[in-house]
Image (cartoon, rainbow over all chains, first blue to last red; front, side, top):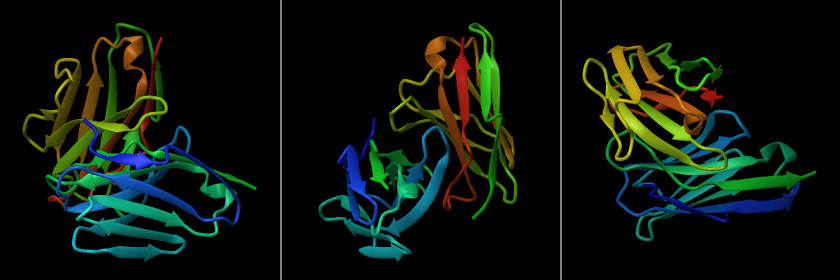
Length: 111
Length: 114
């Protein structure tokens, strides 16, 4: 069964605005990863944050992890129309590589 | 990152036939490969974990006789959907990991059963 829940399920914003997506999970984890998926395509790995890390940055992406609340957030700053995609969090609890995905957030950025 | 190649990217087959999907690690030895399925507008669900040279471990609810997984070498795993039916139409995606490090995903295969 899915471990992660993400909210919002869908997010619609204007270009230039920030987008924040949240992910919650149920069990202890080794790491949490965020992926992007364009419609009908494969996964693009965005960022990995380990259980002993609290915040990580990569370009316009900022990820936080709160293991006490079992939650993570992905912030995309200064969004672009090209950021339009589905975003998934995935947790790795049992061993590296075996991932449990959240339900995903569909982000639409209007030009 | 490492490269995982999945083939074919799209396949259409007739109901009742079998389809084989290949997942290859191109520049590393994949001791473990994972197979996921994604229905339209849904998330990815793990189907099975395969370790080179041993039988695959299937997730609860996944029919092992219907979804045959073979991981005969350190660079290749195959998923065969046997006696496919329209309800098997889905996006299948593999990932591969070397010695329990980060897993890398293939491009996925869109299966349509008509």
